[in-house]
Image (tube, rainbow, N blue to C red; front, side, top):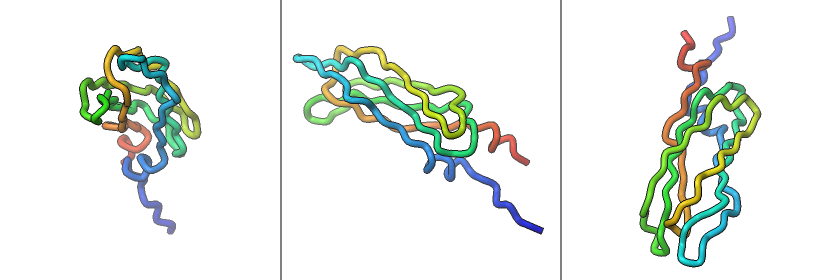
Length: 108
């Protein structure tokens, strides 16, 4: 008998990469042409991945926050989201806040 350890969302989160492109910063601040890309290196379809995007000022203080969602990212695939331009901020910081993977959570 082979015991298969069920995969947890923590295992999957280590196989997901989130990165931003080289976006443009306006002369007086403001961020344009920002694209976030989620790379799913797991063996499972990700039904929904929520991301928090923070806009930072020159001192690194958060001045605005946006919630974004990636939907149905296939195993081994990548998905990009074009972010609406912001009138504020000179830098961005982002992180995954929630992962939904029915293949795992509906597992007995």
